[in-house]
Image (cartoon, rainbow, N blue to C red; front, side, top):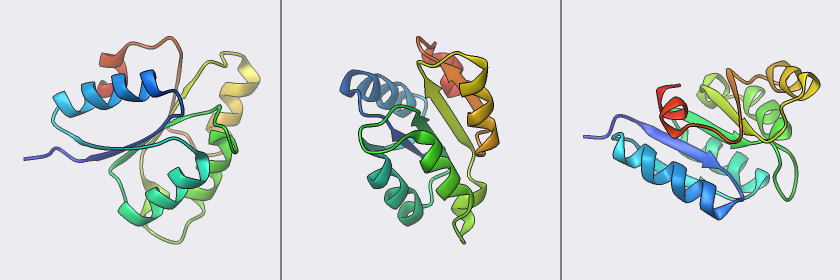
Length: 117
């Protein structure tokens, strides 16, 4: 039995494959999207139990995704939201929390820490 559904929004194929494999091995179902718009649409449609989102995406940024998730008129607005980012400066971290992230983890990351979150 699945422990829940995790949406991964990540455009780097290697990172998304690494995450999805580890998350599945931890007992969760995983859906992967490579763009911000597709990720937002998928989040609203499938109502995942957790969203893991890269900040740097090809069509928009993860901050845009988080803002839209948090203001969506459905239960997705309270879904735990975790940012993965190569940006480790104070401004980027603060922006992540201001738009609604629960967790902000920088790359390179430890997969076990992401799963624990």
